[in-house]
Length: 131
Image 1 (cartoon, rainbow, N blue to C red):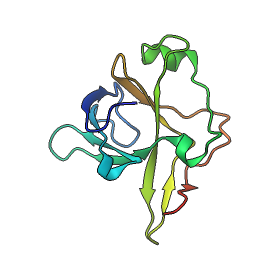
Image 2: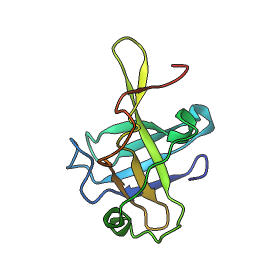
Image 3: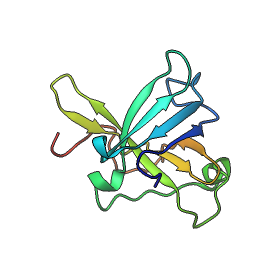
Image 4: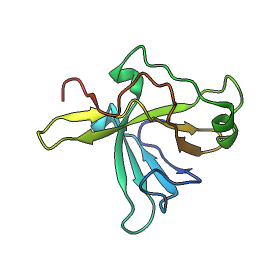
């Protein structure tokens, strides 16, 4: 995982769904907002997201990466990738996590994408425990 306090730019070649115009994001981690990660778009009026390692929400979390997606990330088989699930605050003051369509980042190439496995058993709005 990216070290605490580090900032690095990740390129999402196709952007993120709904934010296709934003392609470059800075990943920010800091002890002050652990276990969360900030994903901040670069540029004026760029979106920002809060994310969390999906294994912190569901310790048994597991999903496969298709070969095409691995190629788009320039990732070798067996290479360690960073998986993040986007967090959404609800109107009622609770939070949910999108475990169905995680972000996957290759720290070696700094390429990222959001995957949506067709047969995922996970939800887009999984309750975030303790929130």
